Length: 233
Image (cartoon, rainbow, N blue to C red):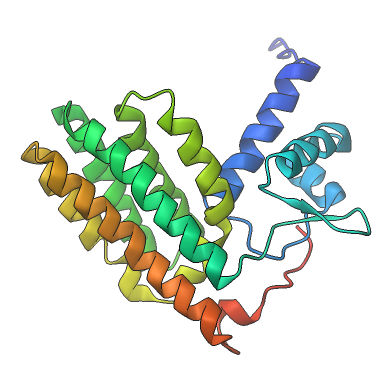
């Protein structure tokens, strides 16, 4: 008879729940305006409501989520002005991380990025948009971790907690997911061209940023931007 595996301790379980919620927000698996249902999240994560409640409180404190007057918690809805500022800051910080990573490129990193980028493209061709967003997040953070900066990475994570949910709306523009910008980044890394790698990353970020800002300004009435009040998760 197989021995039962011990259940994780309270602290470890709390960390796991928080990590999964952070990943979901950064990857765009939650969308702006979505109410975070305590019961449904607990069911989805296979845990009791307590660690979910604590995790939501910590994410509210980090400004990744916001508490409404009725005490419910939702993903913030960003204005065009907030999105503009957010993407400009992303360009500065993530461009810097890319430049640092490009000074110490390995063939292993190049190979990993190529495989991840192939996964982005394949998921998009299959119409599996959740996988597109997850693979895109993996591509970026694989590169940023290679920068080896203990200062930049937490800042980047906080930025993605704010902008990750808006990435869902970029799926309405197929041209944004042709992976051309990722290919340019990889090509620059192969040449150890840190300046070009930084510029290519900024191009990648702003390509999405400009589209999202214009969509927010136009007040579209169709497509994902028209459906901000999502069902509870």
